Length: 260
Image (tube, rainbow, N blue to C red; front, side, top):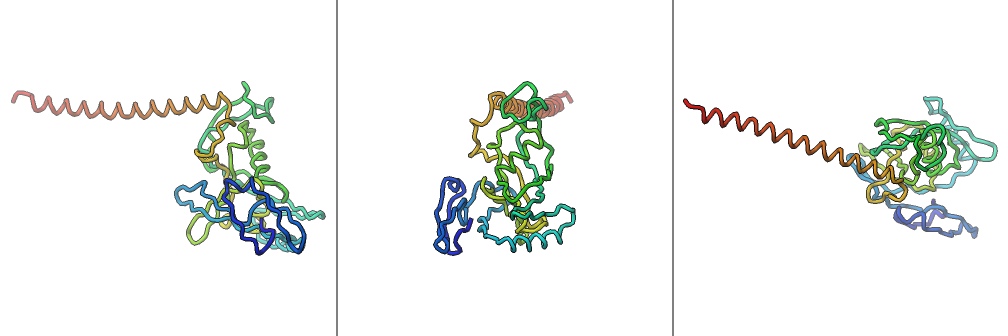
């Protein structure tokens, strides 16, 4: 968050939640929740390119009102924003689910708990699944992640997941992991309603930053079973391939040794 236009403080993404700045503007102490710019190298794959976070700019109530009017005039799917009298605005964001690992889904009897039970099932979420959430400007990234998991009845610990923003610029795709304290609806308002300008993606944390202690024993055991199955499948493919080679070689040998 940019508390002072002259501030050029830069912090790595891994450290930002540990830093608390006391900046002053016009002699008034400001409470800075995040840094001006954050360098994030936590995810890079395929066409994705990392980009420094944009500085958070303070908007007055009148500026927010004007942006919401402009936003609503450009909306084509009726998912408009609403400004309340207290200055808080509400609206919709769409989040694409890009999960590589299976998720654990709760039964209706065990909803609201992140502890394992007999009424839970693990399965892979369909690739490219998109969910729409109605949130307010006060909702943080962490709250959005928790709401997404609750909507899908996911029992997994929210700490396993991260929310990313994806932008298209000059034929490149920029992906940046958001801090838990950022506000997705603010980002949506500033970028406008077009998903080409900004979209949100839910992913698991990268392998190097997975909080394994957040997984239950049954989940870890399930991961091991999946790895064992993948290993056995690959081993069987190799055995079949070399068995086919053996058959062809034996046929060739019989042809050569056959009395003429």
